Image (cartoon, rainbow, N blue to C red; front, side, top):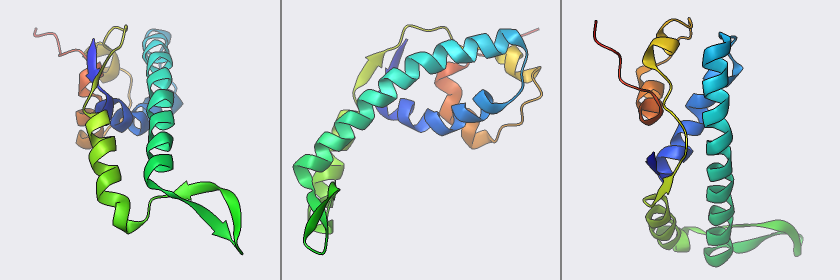
Length: 129
């Protein structure tokens, strides 16, 4: 399935709700498979974000000493946002199956509409009866 990188990053928090819930084996297995694939992509996104921070940021200092991290100052924030945003609009091909809606529906997991929207790409449409 083709997924926009920004959607992967946004789904991370919502997916963690399902990961922490006690669910049946079938749902746990499906969520674990998707999560394993997404974690790889999330790691790549984070690496790229740090590269952009390195490009547009300046080292953070404590009493003149580099503390080993950088941050983007307000005067470079727009450039950072533009380039990182362009990167996040790219796609990745994730080899995984969607979670059947019915597995979630029968799991007892409570989810906000906002979380459902973030996970929509990874959840199959309900089967009409």
